[in-house]
Image 1 (cartoon, helix red, strand yellow):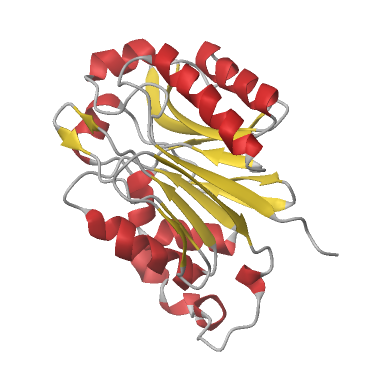
Image 2 (cartoon, rainbow, N blue to C red):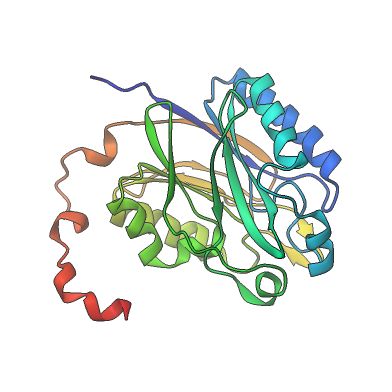
Length: 269
């Protein structure tokens, strides 16, 4: 039975740092535009609802539970527009604060929440604790969706774990800074190719607290081809996923089929 195509929208851009009201207003406009284009899923960058390069106390002040007012507001936007949304926010769980993303379905129901497992530099380590669940997935429109955040994708083990668990589209909201453009242009397509999955890498493109985000958001196919590629400016890019591409026979070597995990056991210790 043929599955329906999944139309994905990448939102490269965010509201003013620290202004959640402006972020929600902007998200509502982007959600309407994505829905008008026929998209089933709108993906936004890392910490898209609050800003990323904030002082730890500012992040702590804005942190909310996964079902807090901010996430409920995003859920309302998703339901009104009729499009699923991935948004980034600081998640509070007791005294702990996580760098999280949540996927909200078209009816406003939270389908999955992922906490960043690999923290990057002083900024992450000063504000967040690392998540402990690496493979977080959900089904959307007949497709298995997985979630990572930014630095997570730079570790080959994280994407391989998703591939082995059946993820078909790996969604990676990010805040990649200059001058590290090779992560977006080289590493991300390679991760998609070596794991035979679609990979949506959605970056910020603004400047924040002295950080210069490079944009270059991309949707890479299972062969590593760039199905979408943004530049350095705000953009809303839309494309359909080929549901059969990840499992289609290929003349290229199959890294998943040809792996020898018995030889790799010592690498994880």
